[in-house]
Image (tube, rainbow, N blue to C red; front, side, top):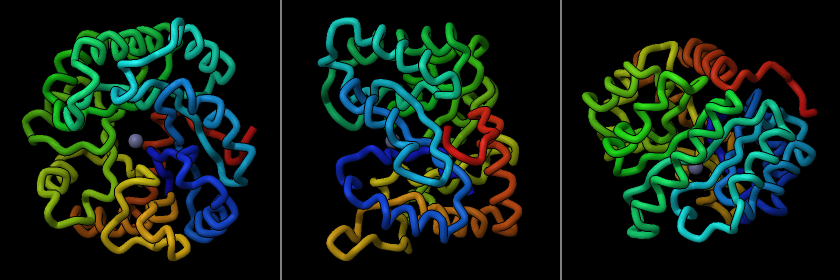
Length: 266
Ligand SMILES: [Zn+2]
């Protein structure tokens, strides 16, 4: 199993590394992509692989929630991190419709600057488009043919919109939403993604799955990558296939998308 989207650098997981490590090793996870969200967590993302024995792949980027208050030359700093790590992706980047700030204008500029960097450095891109997937499609489309690859994380919009993204070459990853019966759109979209474009994720420490395994009791709704087993179980049941088949397919897709070949940290 490969967790295509998590935030292991999140402060809610700090000090829990040993517990997470043992759960992850017991669950058979073969890789986790940990996504940066803002300049002030990039150094933590950079340091993460040293905290774990399972393979951790890195993505550096500015999440749209943090696009409104960036230091000068943030993009040069981002480029430095990416150049230091030739196997890192650009993410988590995109557009957001959940929060009312920052305004769309600053989100667009920061998003497009990062897409330019992904093209320039030939890196895969991990995308956030919550509640504004249509806007994201419009802004992404001019870049789609130039990008090495892009992944829609936590997708939850219509089948029509999904098909337009797929036509542009999208990979799509699904997480805890598919374990919750009320998340109808995510569950419907899960059924419409071709076998060779599908990935699975936890988005840890968020989106605790319906029947996930808790960390120690005081953190029982804090998600972790070992709960990918729950996402896999539900996704396989919904798609009507064997869990081991889906596991192998989604792991292969993740390795293709991220260019992830190693089985240990550098
Ligand atoms: Zn995320």
